[in-house]
Image (cartoon, rainbow, N blue to C red):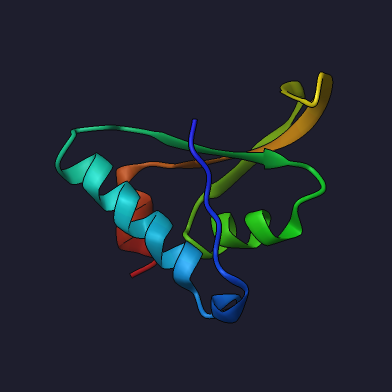
Length: 89
């Protein structure tokens, strides 16, 4: 599991989306991965925008996917596969 944070002065400039695409490109090209999953709490619209702008496909809401501060929480699941990167440029 990993996360992504962007400093306030860089918000809205595409840094997280570009970083996601770069990491995915490395994973697919150098590591031979065939799928990456992006998971975020359902109440996190900024992360959802990053996933969408990165070209990821929404696959649904997973109930009780993560435990946060001892409480099970629902999450949105997105995926990237190698062809997704070429489709979004």
